[in-house]
Length: 149
Image (cartoon, rainbow, N blue to C red; front, side):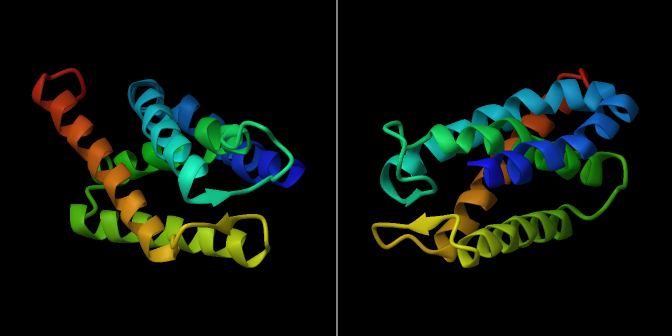
């Protein structure tokens, strides 16, 4: 579990503190939706498709560091790429989906994550793409309502 706390929470928050200090409005707007989407997908996934720690009764407990660290901070970076850096939306989707899938592949190769019930890295890529699509839809909604310039 220490590995997951370091990789999923502590390391991402090094960047998270920087984002919070320099992009406070963006961070406060998009971090909560990142937590919500990560929690939704991980709760479904940990109960049916993958597992990290077999010694927990609640299978989704090991996802907490990732739900509060890595995934929402990646969501904020995703929006930064689109909103402030003016990177192409398609390229941003590709980079973040493939990058997140690559990170997960490393965790699988290290033996820290195990797939079940026919799940594989391709389905994980689809779940990341869905998460980024939800986040992008939320971003468009926020911009439409002129809450975020």
